[in-house]
Length: 154
Image (cartoon, rainbow, N blue to C red; front, side, top):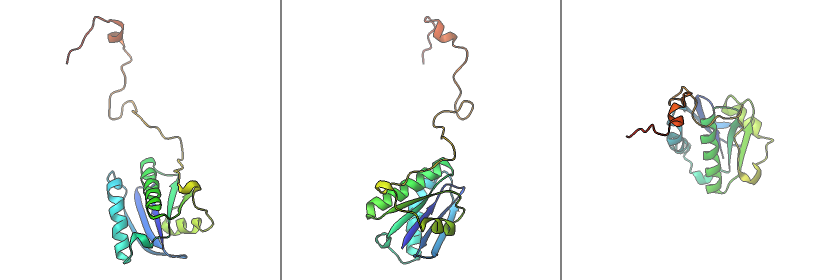
């Protein structure tokens, strides 16, 4: 039995597959709560198939390209489950729109090197503060730095 994870899109998709087909699937919004929901959703899916995590023989995860945070959450979950259960993890990169294509693309894939899937991003991720979004950008006028006598007490 194989666990399938596709979390790099606005709709997260998880599934259980035998060797040939996806036998159970679930979709849910990959919102800001994806990190806290994914484990619960996997557990619920396993329960619908009357299975336990120990019945899994491998984990297949879509490794990108896709949304930065969703990919990280999915890949980290896949790696963690594979490590905890002592099973292989397979990262599948490329255009994968659903669980059936994820399973199909994984057929010729080998387990990840050192059994660790790595996310593939469409472009270099930007990590940090983006001026104008969320927090004010640094002031172009640095007059406070020029005058050492200026002091702001808080």
